[in-house]
Length: 165
Figure (spheres, rainbow, N blue to C red):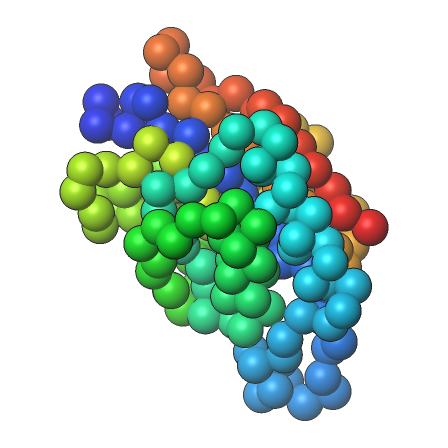
Protein backbone atom coordinates (compact mmCIF):
# COMPACT_ATOMS: atom_id res chain seq x y z
CA UNK A 1 0.00 0.00 0.00
CA UNK A 2 1.14 3.51 -0.58
CA UNK A 3 1.74 6.00 2.18
CA UNK A 4 -1.59 7.69 1.36
CA UNK A 5 -3.45 4.63 2.67
CA UNK A 6 -1.20 3.76 5.61
CA UNK A 7 -3.92 4.76 8.06
CA UNK A 8 -6.65 2.94 6.20
CA UNK A 9 -9.18 0.83 8.04
CA UNK A 10 -10.84 -1.62 5.66
CA UNK A 11 -14.23 -3.03 6.58
CA UNK A 12 -15.45 -6.00 4.58
CA UNK A 13 -19.16 -6.75 4.95
CA UNK A 14 -20.63 -9.91 3.47
CA UNK A 15 -24.27 -9.46 2.44
CA UNK A 16 -27.05 -11.10 4.42
CA UNK A 17 -29.43 -13.93 3.53
CA UNK A 18 -31.48 -13.81 0.35
CA UNK A 19 -33.74 -16.22 -1.47
CA UNK A 20 -31.78 -17.54 -4.42
CA UNK A 21 -33.85 -17.44 -7.61
CA UNK A 22 -33.78 -20.47 -9.87
CA UNK A 23 -32.96 -18.37 -12.93
CA UNK A 24 -29.35 -17.16 -13.07
CA UNK A 25 -30.38 -13.86 -14.68
CA UNK A 26 -32.57 -13.01 -11.68
CA UNK A 27 -29.82 -13.57 -9.09
CA UNK A 28 -28.30 -10.11 -9.55
CA UNK A 29 -31.63 -8.50 -8.62
CA UNK A 30 -32.44 -10.81 -5.68
CA UNK A 31 -33.00 -8.66 -2.56
CA UNK A 32 -32.31 -9.63 1.01
CA UNK A 33 -34.99 -11.65 2.75
CA UNK A 34 -36.29 -10.77 6.24
CA UNK A 35 -33.51 -12.74 7.94
CA UNK A 36 -30.89 -11.02 5.74
CA UNK A 37 -32.27 -7.56 6.52
CA UNK A 38 -32.13 -8.30 10.25
CA UNK A 39 -28.55 -9.63 9.97
CA UNK A 40 -27.52 -6.50 8.05
CA UNK A 41 -28.97 -4.32 10.79
CA UNK A 42 -27.05 -6.33 13.40
CA UNK A 43 -23.88 -5.83 11.35
CA UNK A 44 -24.53 -2.08 11.51
CA UNK A 45 -25.06 -2.30 15.28
CA UNK A 46 -21.79 -4.22 15.60
CA UNK A 47 -19.92 -1.49 13.71
CA UNK A 48 -21.58 1.23 15.81
CA UNK A 49 -20.64 -0.57 19.04
CA UNK A 50 -17.01 -0.70 17.86
CA UNK A 51 -16.95 2.94 16.72
CA UNK A 52 -16.37 1.97 13.09
CA UNK A 53 -17.98 4.46 10.70
CA UNK A 54 -17.08 4.40 6.98
CA UNK A 55 -16.01 7.48 5.03
CA UNK A 56 -16.58 5.67 1.70
CA UNK A 57 -18.76 2.67 0.83
CA UNK A 58 -18.25 0.45 -2.20
CA UNK A 59 -20.51 -2.43 -3.21
CA UNK A 60 -20.90 -4.90 -6.00
CA UNK A 61 -23.82 -4.31 -8.34
CA UNK A 62 -25.93 -7.11 -6.81
CA UNK A 63 -29.12 -5.93 -5.11
CA UNK A 64 -28.31 -7.88 -1.93
CA UNK A 65 -25.01 -6.00 -1.42
CA UNK A 66 -26.67 -2.66 -2.07
CA UNK A 67 -29.49 -3.54 0.36
CA UNK A 68 -26.95 -4.61 3.00
CA UNK A 69 -25.01 -1.34 2.64
CA UNK A 70 -28.26 0.67 2.91
CA UNK A 71 -29.24 -1.06 6.15
CA UNK A 72 -25.78 -0.84 7.74
CA UNK A 73 -25.58 2.89 6.95
CA UNK A 74 -29.13 3.46 8.21
CA UNK A 75 -28.20 1.90 11.57
CA UNK A 76 -25.00 3.97 11.70
CA UNK A 77 -26.92 7.12 10.80
CA UNK A 78 -24.41 8.22 8.17
CA UNK A 79 -24.47 8.85 4.42
CA UNK A 80 -20.88 8.67 3.12
CA UNK A 81 -20.10 8.71 -0.60
CA UNK A 82 -21.02 5.42 -2.29
CA UNK A 83 -19.77 3.67 -5.39
CA UNK A 84 -21.18 0.57 -7.09
CA UNK A 85 -18.93 -1.73 -9.12
CA UNK A 86 -19.61 -4.73 -11.34
CA UNK A 87 -17.68 -7.10 -9.14
CA UNK A 88 -15.47 -5.37 -6.62
CA UNK A 89 -12.46 -7.64 -6.85
CA UNK A 90 -11.86 -11.15 -8.11
CA UNK A 91 -12.84 -13.93 -5.73
CA UNK A 92 -9.37 -15.45 -6.04
CA UNK A 93 -7.59 -12.10 -5.66
CA UNK A 94 -4.10 -12.08 -4.23
CA UNK A 95 -2.80 -9.54 -1.71
CA UNK A 96 -1.39 -7.17 -4.34
CA UNK A 97 -4.70 -7.16 -6.24
CA UNK A 98 -6.76 -6.46 -3.13
CA UNK A 99 -4.41 -3.66 -2.07
CA UNK A 100 -4.45 -2.16 -5.57
CA UNK A 101 -8.24 -2.15 -5.56
CA UNK A 102 -8.38 -0.54 -2.10
CA UNK A 103 -5.91 2.13 -3.24
CA UNK A 104 -7.96 2.80 -6.39
CA UNK A 105 -11.16 3.09 -4.36
CA UNK A 106 -9.40 5.34 -1.81
CA UNK A 107 -8.45 7.69 -4.65
CA UNK A 108 -12.10 8.13 -5.70
CA UNK A 109 -12.76 10.74 -3.05
CA UNK A 110 -10.84 13.61 -1.54
CA UNK A 111 -9.60 13.50 1.06
CA UNK A 112 -8.94 9.74 0.92
CA UNK A 113 -11.11 7.80 3.36
CA UNK A 114 -9.81 6.69 6.72
CA UNK A 115 -12.46 3.94 6.85
CA UNK A 116 -13.44 2.23 3.61
CA UNK A 117 -16.32 -0.28 3.67
CA UNK A 118 -16.85 -2.81 0.88
CA UNK A 119 -19.97 -4.95 0.75
CA UNK A 120 -19.38 -8.13 -1.19
CA UNK A 121 -19.81 -11.88 -1.33
CA UNK A 122 -18.61 -15.01 0.46
CA UNK A 123 -15.78 -15.86 -1.95
CA UNK A 124 -14.45 -12.29 -1.71
CA UNK A 125 -14.65 -12.56 2.08
CA UNK A 126 -12.49 -15.66 1.95
CA UNK A 127 -10.00 -13.92 -0.37
CA UNK A 128 -9.64 -11.19 2.28
CA UNK A 129 -9.25 -13.75 5.05
CA UNK A 130 -6.68 -15.72 3.05
CA UNK A 131 -4.65 -12.70 1.92
CA UNK A 132 -5.08 -10.13 4.71
CA UNK A 133 -5.27 -12.53 7.64
CA UNK A 134 -7.77 -14.83 9.28
CA UNK A 135 -9.24 -18.27 8.80
CA UNK A 136 -11.43 -18.86 5.76
CA UNK A 137 -15.06 -19.64 6.47
CA UNK A 138 -17.43 -22.24 5.14
CA UNK A 139 -20.23 -20.97 2.91
CA UNK A 140 -22.99 -19.47 4.98
CA UNK A 141 -25.94 -17.41 3.91
CA UNK A 142 -25.73 -14.62 6.46
CA UNK A 143 -24.01 -11.31 7.00
CA UNK A 144 -20.46 -11.07 8.30
CA UNK A 145 -18.11 -8.19 9.09
CA UNK A 146 -14.29 -8.16 9.04
CA UNK A 147 -12.41 -5.07 10.22
CA UNK A 148 -8.79 -4.75 9.08
CA UNK A 149 -6.25 -2.09 10.00
CA UNK A 150 -3.16 -1.24 7.98
CA UNK A 151 -0.45 -0.99 10.63
CA UNK A 152 2.69 1.20 10.59
CA UNK A 153 4.84 -1.86 9.86
CA UNK A 154 3.03 -2.43 6.57
CA UNK A 155 0.88 -5.36 7.69
CA UNK A 156 -2.83 -5.95 7.82
CA UNK A 157 -4.22 -6.73 11.25
CA UNK A 158 -7.61 -8.37 11.63
CA UNK A 159 -9.61 -6.65 14.33
CA UNK A 160 -13.21 -7.04 15.43
CA UNK A 161 -15.35 -9.56 13.56
CA UNK A 162 -19.05 -10.28 13.38
CA UNK A 163 -20.89 -13.25 11.97
CA UNK A 164 -24.67 -13.16 11.87
CA UNK A 165 -26.95 -16.12 11.95
